[in-house]
Image (cartoon, rainbow, N blue to C red; front, side):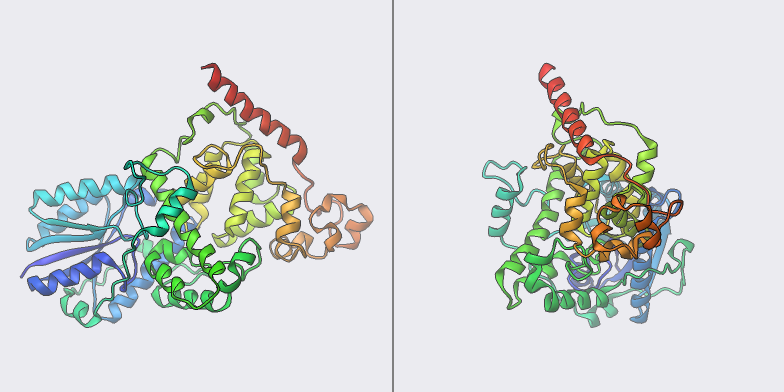
Length: 473
């Protein structure tokens, strides 16, 4: 009997999964059996298992457990991807096809090309699908056939293009087509990690409905507030593929709510597609500025400041609360990602690549293109980036985004008893105030490591130096 592989990577759902949907159709028409495969690639798991990977493997474990309850088994392979699949091809000579949702950027693209080449040498047909995005790289182009590099015209074009509707899988056909194995495989790396963030398709749908019922109607007004009920919190589910971006798009678009909230959210989905498109156009944008004139920015190498930023000890409460939340939970509000990135690059004057790398290890919703694009935007070195002279004031942002200080107090226990008068600028307290509010000398929250206004001037000079060198060259 013919067999076909379904290779799961970051698409851990049964519904609206293009590769799985087409694999089941293939099995029905060809009277074939499907082999479900998860391949653990050491490229993604070098060294310590950080928060981002912990959540990912938690999602993988939950998905496999759910599949087993339906009578669906997985083969788990570990090691070099090409070697792993060559072993499978040798062990199961009736394999005639592979189905997967493709990667179009970065290491994933290179890996897929190598595995495809190996599969074709065995005479195995390769079926890959653009599943991770509403519209993928190369699907939103100018009339000239070139990539957009400015978001506004990209978005106008994105809005007009037809989108692939979600596909519904017949679970009875899935169960009939799945090959069964009595393997009981459980790689130690898939041990259950415990996170306050839920995983899985059911939880993703519940979160989507909660968001549309309670938050979406005012999303355009509240999305920049840093309290817990201001955003969708769907990004970890999108990252692991527990829900598709297509499903979100069509579900939100179909709600009977005011258009402002819906449009604001759909635009965020478009930003995700835009950053993917930019990364496809500039495949080195994790390590090189898209705007080449800023290659010469004289970033400072300051390990002490970098550590203060990483640990949430800069002396600026909003920055520190955000970094402590990131370290504890693996997630922070998008606005806080922008502000902490701006602080590292334009207050501490540290190379944006250090921050991008740190976020890549900590974020449970880490996305290569979005993270690189966001950091290049905040550091003013990317396409359509914020101008370098627009620099977030951490105190002003703190007062605007967390006016009562409740967010700060959640993550900075040293300031829990400090009143609103001082919560955004605790360095203004005198010794009597510090004693009264429970943070006396020796145990108080640190004073600001730098003066924002002085550093702002230095940052502008730093970028002007780079522009001068670029003109001179």
